[in-house]
Image (tube, rainbow, N blue to C red):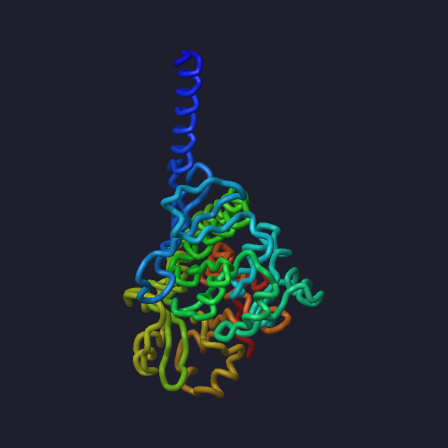
Length: 375
């Protein structure tokens, strides 16, 4: 065999091996800092996204392969859904999917959404008024025909269980569906960290990482400052609904914000997420002398509270007018900003609580999300 031909063949074989190795080579561990349900692994020419804790009793992780057009993906990953990025047409299903689009400047890619009144953002509402976003029904009853006509590159799912026939139908029609589990996160910075998923979907990883890094820095600086105050006000939350008082558990998102703002949440030792169910008598016994009351159900005035239950007047926070609501600041169609944009501005939520707990007198104009009740 000709020597030059031998060396050329060997060189080609070596280069091929190197390329194949690089395709599957794990290059960087970019797992998330605070999010528990989102893991991201960077490889040579694709990202592997692993979603856990998306639903109750989730049986196995959801794994997605995100790659640019033409990228070679190892055969061993063919079983996983593959999403070509950047996506150009998105159908979203939760109002919390809107802020990441606007942070990345990709709001114009949104083509479908269920119940358009749930969106507050002025930018996206302007596109709704121009009929650029199609109403695809309700989350529990999506209009499959409308979604198919939109020809989305991706449908971002949201729900409380994984047995959605709608999403299964879309996947069978070769429309990728990716589930967003930001709503399950218990740390405020964990919720906001789902911005990184949007960064990958729009091939804007560096921009998403930069924005998130600034959020983390601001949040942690405020948290550090809040711990310097010597006084930690006793904080209560929730209200009565059908004879049951619902308050956040000690490992919930709201409880974490209160603690980081230097507040002493009275149910901080209650394990778990979600809400704890209490009787009015239990709450009165424990929280009668609480200094601050955050989130008194959906009330917007003291008069409305008394009309619902005259016994609210026995709480010190009520008597001293230290009750604050997160449901009073709304978009033009009535959607609550706290639940939409607040998810991606945890540092501003924290700033509000610090002001309420520690600033005397309180500058009401400085509050972004929380509001004192009207008389």
